[in-house]
Length: 205
Ligand SMILES: [Zn+2]
Image (cartoon, rainbow, N blue to C red):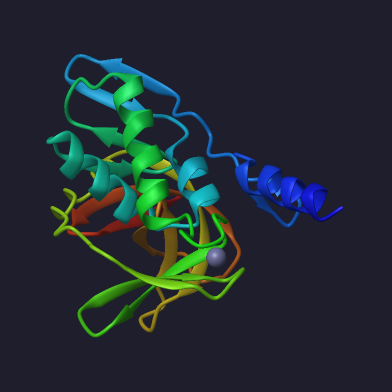
């Protein structure tokens, strides 16, 4: 009987699948499209959601490892070079091993936390902790503004600023809309100015 238990134990230990709460942990294969010297990972946000890591950090890692600039255009990730899908998939697997999977219990239920200058991978399943080396990541280029001056966009006012301007967001970009002072209203807004991470717009009739 002991022999059998040991055998079972060994067989369990060799199971390649990582399970989380009975669900299989499966990082989606990257869906990649290349266009000239640009490579778009169309399901980038899905991947980072499964990994439970910041998209900024993951695109930074890919950019560094693949030696090209990387930017976010959520839900897509964009690499400014022509990169084969397999190379991207390989780097994502490496990232997962280094920054997501617990080396003790092999589960993916982990998070990163800072302790002074160290970054620690903390396992929520078994409590194990290990330091991870965070390569100095090249700051990804600022994402391009998702709006263009002169164009009209359908926006939802999420907040109202102190001066009575409406505040809307598009892909994380903040747009101040003059003439829209009611939270929750949907409006057409014409972009008048793009400045840094903000844009300014006026309500269209
Ligand atoms: Zn663990």
